[in-house]
Length: 346
Image (cartoon, rainbow, N blue to C red):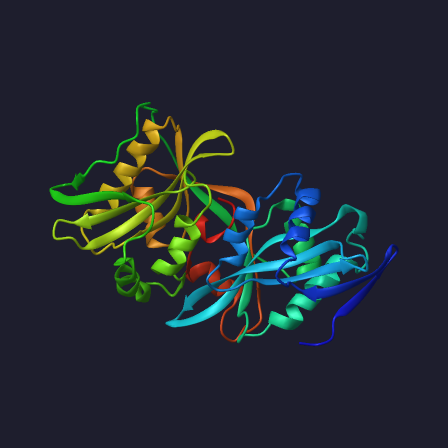
C-alpha cells in the first residue's frame, strides 16, 4: 500500500487512510451526522466487522482524530462463469457536511474514493464494485466514483388480501399433487451448502449462497424479527430451496421477498413455497408482496406466471469494473442473478 494521501481542506489537512479496528466509533458518529439516524454498535459489527469476506474501507481523519469521510464496500464472492471473484458492494459513502466540496471540484470525497480504488481496484482484490444507490448517490457516483449505469431496477409486485391472524408456518404444503415439508429456521440448515453446490452452475453470475454467508447475511442480524427464513423439502428430505421474507417495509404494508433460491428442477417446489410465503404475509396484514430480480432471469418469468406485475423504478444498478476483459456492465445486465438481499437496502 502506498503512503497515506493528504487532502488539504480549508479547515486543515485530512489524512486518507484505511480502516483500522477502533475507527468504528468515529464512523458511526459520521453516519449519524450525515444520515440523521443512529447505527448501533451491534448493527455496525454485523454488517462490517463480521462479514465473512472482510471489510474494504478508506476514511478521512483530521489532525484531531475526527473521521470526516468514508468510502467503503462490503465484499462478496461472485461466481462468474464458474470462477469465484471478490466484488465490492458500495455502501455508506459519506462526507461530513462541514467538509463537502460539491461536484464542481475535486474534494475530500473524491480523494477518499481514489485511495480506495488504488488499493482495491484490481481483479486480485476486487473484480468490480457494485451498488444500488439512491438518486443523490447515483448522481455523485457517476461524477466522482466512475459508476457506470446498468439497467434500471425492476420490481415485481402482487396485491394480496390481508388475513390478520397469528402467523403460522404449515408443516406441509403441496402443489398439484407434489407434497413438501416446510420449516421456519433462525439459521440455515447444513445442507444448504449442498443446495448451493447443486444449483450454482446453472447461473452465469451469482453471489455465493453458502451457509457461512447466508447465516451472516440473515441469521446473524441483531434484529431477530427482521428476516424470516423458510426452507422447503421434498418428502424424502431433499432441501429444494429457501425464501427470506421481510414483513413490512418503511412502515408500509409491503412484504419483501429478500432472497429466493429454489431448485426449478424439483417440480412444484417453487409455487408451493411462494404460496406459503404469500399466506404468511397476509397473516401479518401485508397488502402487497414485492420481489426484485433480474428481469431476464427464469425466476422473474416464474413470478410473472404467478401473478406478479413488473414495474420499473427510478433506481439504477451501477458498477465499475476493473477488468473489462472478464466482465462488463452489459454482460452483468444479462447474466447476473440477484435479489434485494444482495444489497444493503433491506
